[in-house]
Length: 121
Image 1: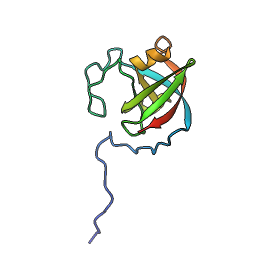
Image 2: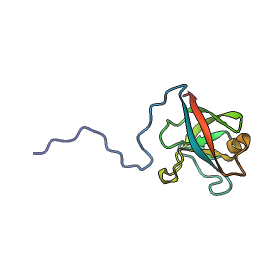
Image 3: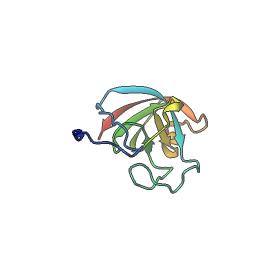
């Protein structure tokens, strides 16, 4: 008789391995933005309705609710991770809402090199 496994199995593609954030350490990455109409009124991974002009972001592995200080173009803003993305194949690790991208001045370019650090959970 085969022994039963005691390890939990994930059947949802949205339950990915969650990173353990460290407050303070800076990360530099390429970021994009979303909210130009491709998902208006849809729910985020956190369950809330997506608001394109809110100061929010999507990250593949940071816990939902993590607050990030994001900097680009000499500007800094605080965003809250409330969604999952971008796709790993893009080479980016952060998607900003339209409002956050506007505040950082990256709307026209579409993507930009940004630095971010975990400011809190």
